[in-house]
Structure formats: C-alpha cells, structure tokens
Image (tube, rainbow, N blue to C red; front, side, top):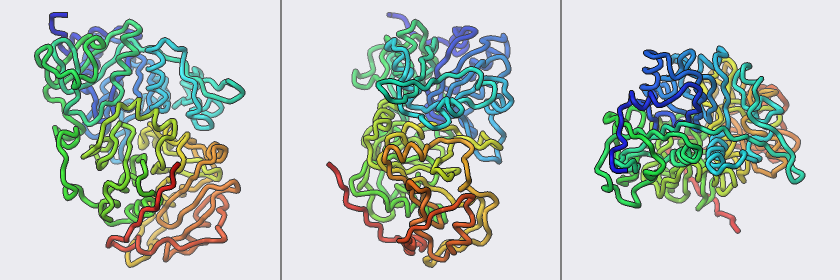
Length: 531
C-alpha cells in the first residue's frame, strides 16, 4: 500500500458500527489509547452511535487518576456488555468510575475473567479454534459453579463459561468471542502502519488482539504518538507489522503512563544506578514486606503483585541483595526494579519486556519459583479474595492476572493486614496495636473466591499468609499460625480477631524481632533447591 494509513480520530471513530465487538489493548494508565476511546465517546454524544458495543479488555483501560480509558465509553446505550480482566479502581476518596456505576446499577452485562485466559481467547479466535480449555479458574468466582465471572445480576442470566469433562478431568471452557475492531497503542507508526514501542513501558497484548481481528475480517486501529516515513523503522524494531494494521491515529500528547509524560528508564532505553530507587517507608507495611522477602531463595524467579508485595524488591535493595532474584510482572517486564505508584506494571533496568500473552503462558504453567501477592479477605478454607468487595466494588480492580498466576504456582505468599484499619506502631523490635481494626479480614467465607485454598490442597501448593502480627500456613486441617509477632498476645490479637478457629502450631515461633526495627535486618536469602 503506497498511501499513508493515517486518519483523524473522528474518522476512525466513524468506522465502528453498532453492535461491534471491540477489543482494547491497555493496562490501566499504561499503554491506554485514551484519545481514541475519547473520540468514540464524543461521536456517540453527537450522533448517538455507535450503540450496543461489546467490549473486551484483557487488562483495564484507564484508571481513576487522570486516564479515563473505558470511562469515555460509559454512556447509556453505547455499551451492551464488557468482559474485562480488570476494571479501573482507586481509593474511596475519589468518585466511583462511570463504568463501575453502570455495572453496579445493572445497566450493562459485565464479566471479570482472568487476564491470561482473555489473551488465550484472542489467540484461539485468531487460529479459528473454538475456545480455551483450561484449569485456570476452577473453584474460583470464574467457575460456573460459583458466579461464572458475572459481576452483576444482569450477567448471571447469560453465562460465558462452561465446566466440562475432558480426558476424565474437570476443565473450564471459555468459548471464543470474536472481535471485529481492535484498538491498540504504540509509540511510532510508519506510513504503512508498522508499529514500534520504543517509549512504551510494556508491549501488552496488542499483537495478539490485532491477529484475532485481522484473521476474522475486522479492522485494527493503532493510536501512536508520532508517524515517520514508510520504511524508516528498523526490522527488529517493529512489534506489530503493517499487514495487521488498517488505520493509524495520532495523539502527539500521548503520555507514557498516568501522570508521566516520558521517562526513558520506564521503556528500558537507559539503565539507572541503584541509588535512584528509594527504600520503602518505615511502617507496618514494610514489616510485612520484610517477612515476605524471607520466603525467597537465592536465584529465584519471583512473580510480584500490586500492593504490599510490590515493596519487596526495595527490601532486597536496602539489604544489599538487589539482582539476586529475577522479578516477573504480568504486564511483561522481567528483571530489573519494578516501579511503584502510577508506574506499577513497569520495571526500571529490566532484562526484557515480554508480550503479556507470553508472560501469562509462563505464569499459567507455573514456570516461576514463588509468587508474592496481596489479600483483602481470607476464609476458613484458605480461600483469598482480592477481586470484589460488595459494599464498594470499585475499590478493587477485579482478578487481573491473579487467577492465572496462582493456578499452578509452586509457592504462594499472600501479604496483608490481619484486620482492616488497625492503628499500629512498629519499632524497637516489637509490634504494638494502639487500636484494633474496624473490620475483620479473616472471615468464615470470603465474598469472592479469587484463589481457591481447596484447589491448592489438591495441587500440593505451598501457601503462606503473612501479616503484621502473625504468619499462617495452609494445611489440610485448616489455617495454622506458625509465627507470632513480638509484643502480640496470641489469643487477644490473633485468635480472637478471626471469625473462625485457627490452628496453633505446636512449634509456634516468634517472628524475627529484627524486622520490627527500622535499621536493615540482615536478610539472608535461602539456598535454592532446583532440579
């Protein structure tokens, strides 16, 4: 094709038809084609079209901090349904995102599926296979024996996942949903539509989403920051080739991430000294992260989730152990120093940035050594909820890659506070509870099963729960307290603060007092056992 594929945002928005299935490549405020989504919303406000779209978001598009993403489309009549690995989320001090309001009010059908499974669905749609057969999601809220991924009552009447028996075993089957439009984002396009990602913090899943659309006769729209002459991008530089791209739209103001215009360390163009990274602030969260770090072996490949666990790399840095383990996060970064706050999902000094679908294959197959994740609630079965709080669902993003990661992980360490909102003081080798929390997090039954303790027992997974006041492990008999913090009364501060009986180990230990003092605590990584 000799002519340029560059068109205006308004023209591109006009290419989307009523009833289309639209897949969007994004990760909250990282890699979000925000301007293109805004153009679709603007067209709807002026023309009343497109209407009744079905949206696919393997990872959330937009956040609550400045990138609206899918909220540009959250207008009555524009959306029929949304299937997402995650949704925009944020603190209770900010208004509920419009998309969440539509979900809560049953205005649209809404489903939450594992991000990796959604990428698998795109790949299988591209290959004209019927759908995804997987163990991912069994006995979680994605299982049709529970909610089947439905996020509101309207969705429950239209299931999108089946439980089947194949080769004598139970599996979940996700029938493919074929998209007609893909909206992806890159840094640069040439006039022919070749796309490069040199300023992006992640590759995400745009190539697989484009393949699913291209192989099924749809259109691919790429939002970029700049356009260059045809043929001027190096062959190895092109991540999505021109034969997969129909149209290019340009947003010269495209930010690298939420509230970050451009930082070359995020895109791996430069590597910065360790001194550039701040240590974790001294508080009870740091104590939890310190204890979680003690579960890592030298040379491990470690998956890292959002929340308290995200501080563990800074713990190793402070202890002089940076580089002794390899971090892997679902947006695709491998190695380096995972970043925090608005830049979470990126890593500085990364060894590589994998496409998210490939990273999820690695996670789903349990190729890594340990996963450090967070929790909102834990119940008597060892089930973990991170995906939904009925009273304020928008405070959580949904499951994201959590279910993909935990299904076949060898070892899992869930970190969080024992109760919600407790006033705590840490220092001088002990923990003091100044005021107990307002609500319990160890409850009889979690509101949403994002991780199944029952399945973990069947699979022989090692599962630990690390809190500021104790450490527990999952056993066949239930949750067992194996360590208690110095300064804590076992009965008053632990056993009586759970809504179900906890087992106390006959070999109960006191948590290392050094992690409760502000100075470095002399972390020694265990020797790895491999082979």
